[in-house]
Length: 363
Image 1 (cartoon, rainbow, N blue to C red):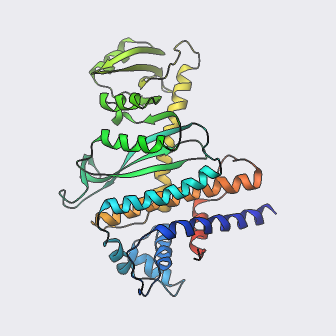
Image 2: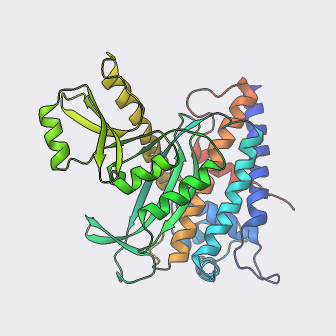
Image 3: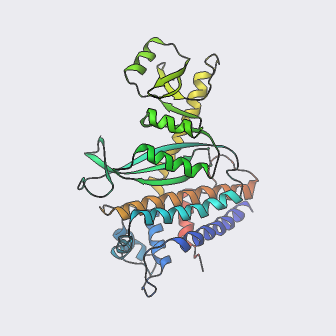
């Protein structure tokens, strides 16, 4: 009975989501085109499912289905966007439709923990190409495409609230303002986690200005190194000054016995016997962002070697869309069957993509 209910509910929700996003997704297809929008969407979902390139995916999918566009034709339509803003606005609109389903289901009606991060995709072409930014040497290159995300990192209820492209003229502060202002219009933030790249006076001042509780690993600059050498753990240094901003430095002992420093405005009690354990447990939630990126990469992100940024951006944003639909589908189905969200996932990500591929959205 549970299996039947799960199957029925998965198909029902998949059809709902596919119909919603299909209505907004613009693939630059003319009304008299040989292939329908749904033909192109199915090819894209198939490419995500198989982790394949457009041309190879098209050939393989043609073995299973008759009406499949050529990979070259599909890429041609993606190259016909006018600018990155057009793509970004389109996916924000779609994501807000998905979010509305979450809101109506009361899935994120409490304060939530969020994580902010950048993800880099190595780039090996002309460093002056649009949206290519510099990075530390890695995998044979010093350039990449960069994307920023703010994610809900609650266990079993993770969600990409907003994903943004990051260009060479986009400052970290500008991106933070966009991510936080968007998020705070939708949820209340309980705590924010970020990596040490955000340990700067300007970033921390932004978090304080938005009145957000944060935990960030402190970069071991000479001042922090000196503190770690002379101060015992656990210790909380209050009103630590960095330029024009003040915050606390929490020093905790890690599992290897070393001292670690975190920037925070949370009022930790250094006399708490569980101080270090609690601090690391809380900050460990940031790895929910890493988990999300890993699922995006291995389940929802098509492959491409194209240097065309429209294609790159579209693929990344589409992967976040699939991820969010999977997470919400799993939560809704779980609540429908058990009355609450259980630990783990009741619907595997690969299975969800397979079901989504077989659904005819209608309309």
